[in-house]
Image (tube, rainbow, N blue to C red; front, side, top):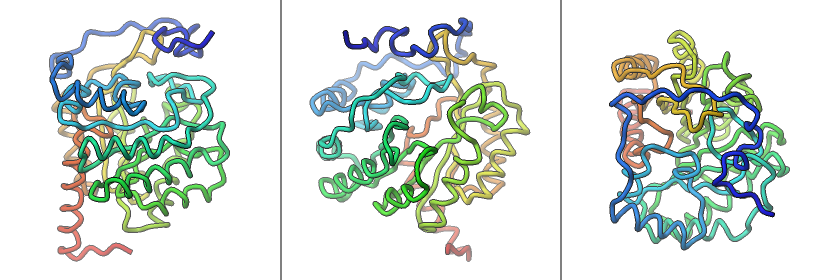
Length: 321
C-alpha cells in the first residue's frame, strides 16, 4: 500500500515517536488569511496540470495565498520526499522515487505559462543520488532558459554534503542568477534542529560559489524563535559576510505540527527591524527580516533591489573580482 502523505504519521515517520510540543497561539502580526483568490486558484491549476510540487504547499508556507494570487510559486524539484529529517521541516521524509527526467521540461513549461519574471527553484535533499541532484538542477535551469529566456532564475539548493565537491561546479556553470542555500539556524542548534547537516559545510558551500563565479549573487537565510539568542544571530551574520554572501533573509519559525521542534518564542517586529539594521551595517547588499519573511517571499522584487544595490556599490568604487 502506498504512503498517504496527508497522514502525519506516514508523512513524518521519523517524528512519530517524538513527544508532542505545545503549539503556542500566534500573535496578531503573523496571522494571515486563508487563500481564496482567483489568481491563487489559477496558479494552483497550472501546478496540478504540470504535475509539479511546490515548497509553498509542502512546507506549509504562510504566504502561499499572497504569492500564488500574483502568479508567484516556488517550484520544488526531485520529488516530494526528502532523505533528511530536520525537526523544523514539514516536507515528507523517507525514500524518494527515482528522478523524473521529464521534470525540467515541465517546470520550464509552467514558468512560461505563468509568465514569470523571476522564478525560484528549490528541492528536497537527495542523499540517495550520487551528485545530490546537481545535474538535475542544471538541466532545470537550462530548460527554463530555453522556454522563458526573459525570466531570472533563483535556486535554493541542498547542501550536497555527501557528494564530491565538484558537483557544485555543475550547478554554478548553469548560470542561475541567484544561488541560495539556507543555513536555517545558528550553529549551536544544528544537532537539534538540522541534525543531518553541518553548519560550516553549508557556509563553505556558499563561499565556494563566489570562488567559482564571483559575479553570481549568493543568498542565505535563518529562522528565529528556535531557541537562539541575539548574539548568536549576529555571529551568523558575521560568518555569512566572511563568506561574501550578498543577501540575508530572517523569518519567524512556525511549528508545523506538535511533533516538530517547539517554538521557543515569537520574535517581535521591532526585533526583526533591529536585525535588519545590524545586517545592513555588516555590509549585506540586501536584507529581508520580518516575521513572515521566507526564502522566496517577494523574491522577484528583492532581486531587482539586489541588482540595484550592487550597481550602487560599483558606482561607489567597490570592486568584484
